Amino acid sequence: MKLVIVDLGCGNIGSVGIAFERFGVAPVVIGEAEEIASADKVVLPGVGAAGYAMEQIEARGLAPVLRALRQPMLGICLGMQLLFESSEEENAVCLGLIPGRVRRLEPAAGRPVPHMGWSRLDVRDENIGLRSGDYVYFAHSFACDPVPETVASAGYGREIPAAVRSGNRLGAQFHPERSGEAGARFLRTWLER
Image 1: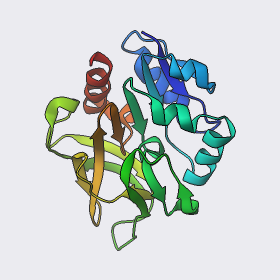
Image 2: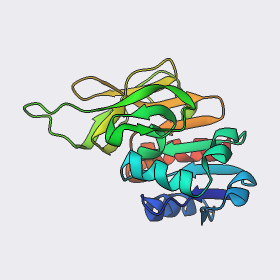
Image 3: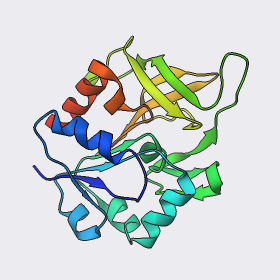
Protein backbone atom coordinates (compact mmCIF):
# COMPACT_ATOMS: atom_id res chain seq x y z
CA MET A 1 0.00 0.00 0.00
CA LYS A 2 1.26 3.46 -0.90
CA LEU A 3 0.19 5.79 1.92
CA VAL A 4 1.06 9.43 1.32
CA ILE A 5 1.13 12.15 3.95
CA VAL A 6 0.85 15.51 2.18
CA ASP A 7 3.83 17.73 3.01
CA LEU A 8 2.65 21.31 3.50
CA GLY A 9 5.78 22.47 5.28
CA CYS A 10 3.92 22.47 8.59
CA GLY A 11 1.85 20.14 10.68
CA ASN A 12 2.00 16.96 12.69
CA ILE A 13 3.66 14.89 9.97
CA GLY A 14 6.09 13.08 12.28
CA SER A 15 3.56 11.89 14.85
CA VAL A 16 1.06 10.88 12.16
CA GLY A 17 3.75 8.90 10.35
CA ILE A 18 4.75 7.08 13.54
CA ALA A 19 1.10 6.21 14.23
CA PHE A 20 0.82 4.47 10.85
CA GLU A 21 4.20 2.76 11.22
CA ARG A 22 2.78 0.99 14.29
CA PHE A 23 0.46 -0.84 11.86
CA GLY A 24 3.37 -1.89 9.64
CA VAL A 25 2.73 0.80 7.02
CA ALA A 26 5.59 3.11 6.03
CA PRO A 27 4.02 6.36 4.82
CA VAL A 28 5.71 8.58 2.26
CA VAL A 29 5.80 12.30 3.09
CA ILE A 30 5.59 14.22 -0.16
CA GLY A 31 4.31 17.46 -1.62
CA GLU A 32 4.32 16.58 -5.33
CA ALA A 33 1.00 16.36 -7.14
CA GLU A 34 1.85 13.26 -9.21
CA GLU A 35 2.90 11.24 -6.16
CA ILE A 36 -0.22 12.24 -4.27
CA ALA A 37 -2.45 11.35 -7.21
CA SER A 38 -0.88 7.89 -7.50
CA ALA A 39 -1.24 7.02 -3.79
CA ASP A 40 -3.57 4.31 -2.52
CA LYS A 41 -4.50 6.48 0.47
CA VAL A 42 -3.79 10.13 1.31
CA VAL A 43 -3.50 11.91 4.66
CA LEU A 44 -3.87 15.69 4.90
CA PRO A 45 -2.23 16.41 8.27
CA GLY A 46 -3.03 19.11 10.80
CA VAL A 47 -1.48 21.75 13.06
CA GLY A 48 -0.97 25.25 11.72
CA ALA A 49 -3.08 28.06 10.30
CA ALA A 50 -5.68 27.62 7.57
CA GLY A 51 -4.49 30.56 5.47
CA TYR A 52 -0.86 29.44 5.46
CA ALA A 53 -1.79 25.84 4.73
CA MET A 54 -3.97 26.86 1.78
CA GLU A 55 -1.19 29.11 0.48
CA GLN A 56 1.13 26.08 0.53
CA ILE A 57 -1.48 23.91 -1.21
CA GLU A 58 -1.98 26.52 -3.93
CA ALA A 59 1.75 27.28 -4.33
CA ARG A 60 2.50 23.58 -4.83
CA GLY A 61 -0.36 23.11 -7.29
CA LEU A 62 -2.05 20.57 -5.02
CA ALA A 63 -5.59 21.97 -4.82
CA PRO A 64 -6.82 20.41 -8.10
CA VAL A 65 -5.24 17.05 -7.19
CA LEU A 66 -6.73 16.99 -3.68
CA ARG A 67 -10.15 17.96 -5.01
CA ALA A 68 -10.02 15.23 -7.67
CA LEU A 69 -8.86 12.34 -5.47
CA ARG A 70 -11.06 9.24 -5.64
CA GLN A 71 -8.97 7.15 -3.27
CA PRO A 72 -9.50 7.39 0.52
CA MET A 73 -8.35 10.71 1.99
CA LEU A 74 -8.09 11.44 5.72
CA GLY A 75 -7.89 15.01 7.01
CA ILE A 76 -6.58 15.39 10.57
CA CYS A 77 -7.32 18.50 12.68
CA LEU A 78 -6.45 21.41 10.37
CA GLY A 79 -6.48 18.85 7.54
CA MET A 80 -10.17 18.20 8.30
CA GLN A 81 -10.90 21.94 8.41
CA LEU A 82 -9.31 22.37 4.97
CA LEU A 83 -11.93 20.00 3.52
CA PHE A 84 -14.59 22.69 4.09
CA GLU A 85 -15.42 25.71 1.95
CA SER A 86 -13.86 28.39 4.12
CA SER A 87 -12.44 29.27 7.51
CA GLU A 88 -12.64 32.36 9.71
CA GLU A 89 -8.96 31.73 10.43
CA GLU A 90 -7.16 34.20 8.18
CA ASN A 91 -10.43 34.33 6.16
CA ALA A 92 -9.14 31.35 4.18
CA VAL A 93 -10.85 29.86 1.15
CA CYS A 94 -10.42 26.12 1.65
CA LEU A 95 -10.78 23.09 -0.63
CA GLY A 96 -14.60 23.18 -0.75
CA LEU A 97 -15.04 19.40 -0.59
CA ILE A 98 -17.64 19.60 2.19
CA PRO A 99 -20.14 22.47 2.45
CA GLY A 100 -19.65 24.64 5.52
CA ARG A 101 -17.47 27.17 7.30
CA VAL A 102 -14.94 26.76 10.08
CA ARG A 103 -15.43 29.20 12.98
CA ARG A 104 -13.38 30.30 15.98
CA LEU A 105 -14.23 28.63 19.28
CA GLU A 106 -15.57 31.03 21.92
CA PRO A 107 -13.74 31.00 25.26
CA ALA A 108 -15.72 30.91 28.51
CA ALA A 109 -15.07 30.27 32.18
CA GLY A 110 -13.62 26.78 32.48
CA ARG A 111 -13.48 26.47 28.69
CA PRO A 112 -10.31 28.14 27.40
CA VAL A 113 -9.32 28.42 23.77
CA PRO A 114 -7.48 26.61 22.37
CA HIS A 115 -9.44 23.50 23.29
CA MET A 116 -6.61 21.24 24.43
CA GLY A 117 -7.44 17.99 26.12
CA TRP A 118 -9.61 14.92 26.16
CA SER A 119 -13.29 15.07 25.23
CA ARG A 120 -15.96 12.39 25.12
CA LEU A 121 -17.48 11.47 21.76
CA ASP A 122 -21.04 10.97 20.64
CA VAL A 123 -20.67 8.66 17.62
CA ARG A 124 -23.40 8.37 14.99
CA ASP A 125 -21.64 5.87 12.76
CA GLU A 126 -19.42 3.22 14.37
CA ASN A 127 -18.15 2.12 10.95
CA ILE A 128 -15.36 4.68 11.41
CA GLY A 129 -13.88 2.69 14.30
CA LEU A 130 -15.10 4.92 17.12
CA ARG A 131 -17.78 4.34 19.77
CA SER A 132 -19.92 6.70 21.79
CA GLY A 133 -18.16 7.28 25.08
CA ASP A 134 -14.64 7.11 23.60
CA TYR A 135 -12.36 9.90 24.76
CA VAL A 136 -10.06 11.48 22.17
CA TYR A 137 -7.50 14.28 22.29
CA PHE A 138 -8.21 17.71 20.80
CA ALA A 139 -5.88 20.68 20.22
CA HIS A 140 -7.62 23.42 18.21
CA SER A 141 -9.01 26.96 18.27
CA PHE A 142 -11.34 26.61 15.26
CA ALA A 143 -14.00 24.06 14.36
CA CYS A 144 -16.61 23.60 11.68
CA ASP A 145 -20.29 23.90 12.45
CA PRO A 146 -22.37 20.71 12.59
CA VAL A 147 -23.06 19.45 9.08
CA PRO A 148 -24.99 16.47 7.66
CA GLU A 149 -21.60 14.79 7.09
CA THR A 150 -20.90 14.73 10.87
CA VAL A 151 -20.39 11.13 12.06
CA ALA A 152 -19.03 11.90 15.56
CA SER A 153 -19.22 14.96 17.75
CA ALA A 154 -17.99 16.37 21.05
CA GLY A 155 -19.16 19.30 23.14
CA TYR A 156 -17.07 22.38 23.81
CA GLY A 157 -19.47 25.25 24.33
CA ARG A 158 -21.19 24.13 21.16
CA GLU A 159 -21.38 20.91 19.23
CA ILE A 160 -18.00 20.24 17.63
CA PRO A 161 -17.97 17.82 14.70
CA ALA A 162 -15.19 15.49 15.81
CA ALA A 163 -15.36 13.42 12.62
CA VAL A 164 -16.99 13.98 9.24
CA ARG A 165 -17.36 11.73 6.23
CA SER A 166 -18.24 12.59 2.65
CA GLY A 167 -17.67 9.98 -0.05
CA ASN A 168 -14.01 8.98 -0.03
CA ARG A 169 -13.14 11.73 2.47
CA LEU A 170 -12.94 11.28 6.23
CA GLY A 171 -11.97 14.05 8.62
CA ALA A 172 -10.99 14.01 12.29
CA GLN A 173 -10.95 17.28 14.23
CA PHE A 174 -9.26 15.39 17.07
CA HIS A 175 -5.75 13.96 16.88
CA PRO A 176 -6.07 10.19 16.42
CA GLU A 177 -2.29 9.82 16.63
CA ARG A 178 -2.48 11.15 20.22
CA SER A 179 -5.77 9.53 21.25
CA GLY A 180 -4.64 6.21 22.65
CA GLU A 181 -6.61 3.06 21.89
CA ALA A 182 -9.61 4.89 20.39
CA GLY A 183 -7.38 6.85 18.01
CA ALA A 184 -5.49 3.71 16.98
CA ARG A 185 -8.79 1.92 16.32
CA PHE A 186 -9.94 4.87 14.17
CA LEU A 187 -6.71 4.88 12.10
CA ARG A 188 -6.66 1.09 11.71
CA THR A 189 -10.29 1.08 10.53
CA TRP A 190 -9.48 3.74 7.93
CA LEU A 191 -6.39 1.85 6.76
CA GLU A 192 -8.29 -1.40 6.36
CA ARG A 193 -11.13 0.03 4.24
